[in-house]
Length: 366
Image (cartoon, rainbow, N blue to C red; front, side, top):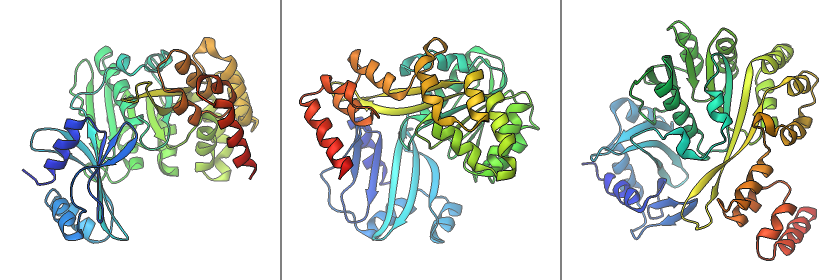
């Protein structure tokens, strides 16, 4: 058993989401959003490097020795799965282990809006799941793939960095390919997937112009494409996709979005009222004619008003979703207040809310 497994086992016993290892501090656990140290000595550089090198393959060691970060999946001795990032910083090595459940979550178990299941019913087009790092995008996509796998007879190709949830083929065939293990880049992976008779292509991240181009091509030619971006709203997602490609392709990109984008789901994780867990809260944009026209006429700043009035289509702004979750007592009001854009409706649900809002405004003016 690798020595690092002892920290991972402790983290699993505590129910943490991540285990952090860094030189000069003790190991730390991410518990419901907070980073907490465990009772252990500060890690020395040689000690931590020895832990990390023990679980790397020869290729990974060579890559790491050249100063590169490494992303990979790791299975501990007891069969627990982790997504790992190993990196170097000013004081030496560092590593983060994200716990991955052995089975993909059921879509119904995540408390997501009903429209997410409707996104899975499409046969072609693009669905984007967005949010900051650590907001549950991979979990949502895994649940969508699991739903498709259970309910439709499809060829699903999932391109990941690294592979996290392992999908066993059920009604569908699920092929999972890992960046730098099975494919050199996401763009090459999408290009190759289109020759492999796919129905659904999951792209782990639309991180460069070539990947965006190939994903758009796949969505336009009869495939359902699921992808992620590190954007924090529907408007920012649209703008990021348009800006990802050269200026001469701008009109073509806007046309694609208005015709082939199915929807955008933007997530944050908000603490539950007992502060012992976190729940996904979502902004939802569903493409319609009005939003398509706003995209074509460079008026994406007006999209939020469409989300506010598009409830019958399943749309909602982040603030609407946060407020509904607070009123249903599903999330902590103070945490929701922190995520809200317009904080005024939330002040009645938190102690001294008006005073906090005034302080917030004063700091903003300062």
